[in-house]
Amino acid sequence: MSRKLGKYELIKKLGAGASSSVYLARDPFARRDVAIKVASPEALSDPDKGSIYSRLFLNEASLVGKLNHPHIVQIYDAVVAETICYIVMEYVAGGTLEQYTSPGRLLPLNRIVELIFKCTRALDFAHRLGITHRDIKPANILLAGDNDIKIGDFGAAITGQNQLSQVGAIGSPAYMSPEQVLERPLDHRTDIYSLGVVLFQLLTGHLPFEAENQANLVYRIVHDEAPLPSSLRPDLPPAFDRIVARAMAKEREQRYQSWQELAQELTDTVRRGRLPSAGSDFPESERFDTLRALPFFTDFSDAELWEVLRFSQWRRIPPGTLMLHDGDSGDAFAFVAAGQFTVSKGGMPLDVLCRGDCFGEMAVLNRHASTRGADVVALTEADIVVIRGEALEKASDACRLHFYQGFVDVLVSRLNIANQRLAGT
Image (cartoon, rainbow, N blue to C red; front, side):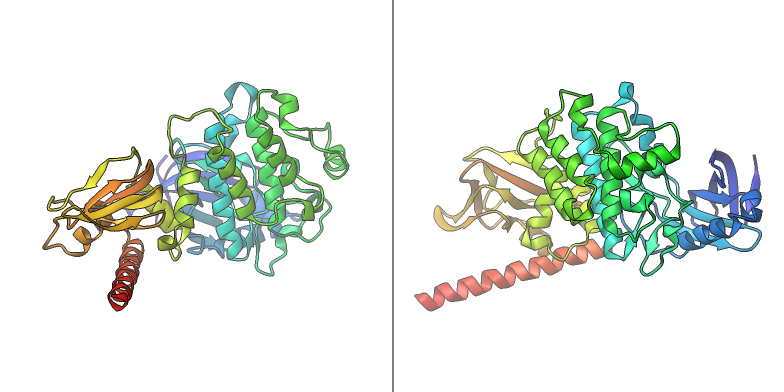
């Protein structure tokens, strides 16, 4: 196929639903592939639901340029008119999580945790903007590579005071919270419930509630207790029963009250060794959580932290390892994530570095003198985050600015400590 929709060159149809079709297209000006969701003429002209479909497109169009997060599908452009409605979005080629929701196609547990963790970070970002998605399901979670996701389809979202999504005809009943199927006021905890359903399905290959018709399904969601995932998959670690049960609690007050609570429990499940090894000492959820806890990264946005994860290297260092040698050249610097290091010059001890401290940054700050000014040796087994100067140079402007601001704070702190020591002598 070869035709245009506005400035966009349509390449092929990717899929179709009851009210819209999605096309792969080319933006000739930005020189990138995009996905375009187009409302069907029949849906827009429907006497009963046409106005609802138009409002859904308008709702999603209002989010153009607002949801800038690495795990949310970017909305680039929108046209909402009486006879035509379409949304231009980031194209994500990996399909959706639906392909991993049947018993024979389940993902490894570590990968499930990583993907759900990233969902929590994306939905927390949206929540902080006053946005509740309200239609979280595997079909709206797109795969970008092996271990990345992007949440899409914010058409039914509550934005600020907008209660559009309270319309009963919108949403996917199997993933709805009790308050949602009862058409009661909603907040972010309805998304927590829905993500709990997604987690249940990814773990077991089944939905927690199924019924022969929608009325019976609604009854079960409101009145029946969801089964534990381990009742369908006995080999699951007990932590998953607890996480799913709390996320899917009938009463909102019994669920996780924040996305951070849920994210933390997922990270703890990995950190405490409750999962089989994924072949890495540093799962992404734990790396993100570690960086977020270090004072140096306090002012970094979630998007910038994910960027740091992409260009950093994480290493576990045995005791006695010489990390920097006085007089050597190099442009890499590192942060201590765990353990301790000694700093010395000419055999004289100068300092002990602990969790959160950085070393080697002077080679980046002073481009004309990239030689090391001291020896740095691991005092204990330690975990470090290594960043090369050339990688930092390629980072986004905002990310790089936060690094340099952090380095200034480090230098000021060291000067203050030096002055205190001089005053003490």
